[in-house]
Amino acid sequence: MFPSISAAQEIGLAVLLVATLVWVFGLGHMLWGARSHHPEPAAFEGITVIPAQRTAAAHPMESVELTEAEEEAFAGLIRTLPHS
Image (tube, rainbow, N blue to C red; front, side):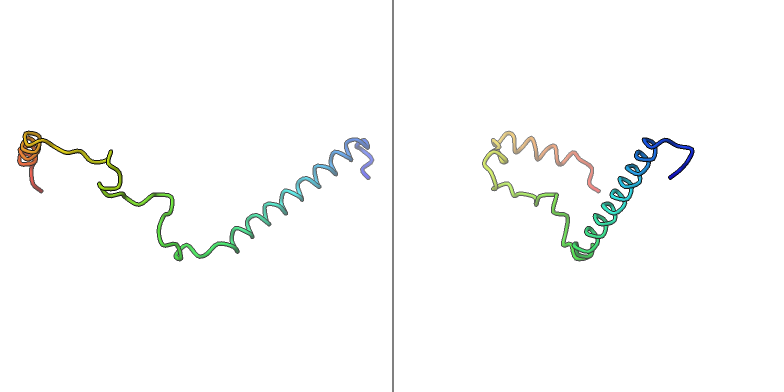
C-alpha cells in the first residue's frame, strides 16, 4: 500500500483505523440512543435521587420524648434567639 512503511506498520495502521471507526460508530449509537429513548427534561416531575422527607412518626428512633425541664430549657433557648 505505502512503499515507505513495512507490512507490519500497514497492518497496525489498518487495525488502528478499524478501532477508531468502531469507537466513533459506538459513540454515535450511544448518543443517539440516549437522545431518542428518554423523555424531555420538562417531563420529569422531580429529582428521584433525593428521597422524600420522612415525618417524625416514620421510625421510633427519629423522635425523643423530652422531660418537662428539657422542654422549658428549649423554650428559653428559643426565646433568646433573635426574631427575623
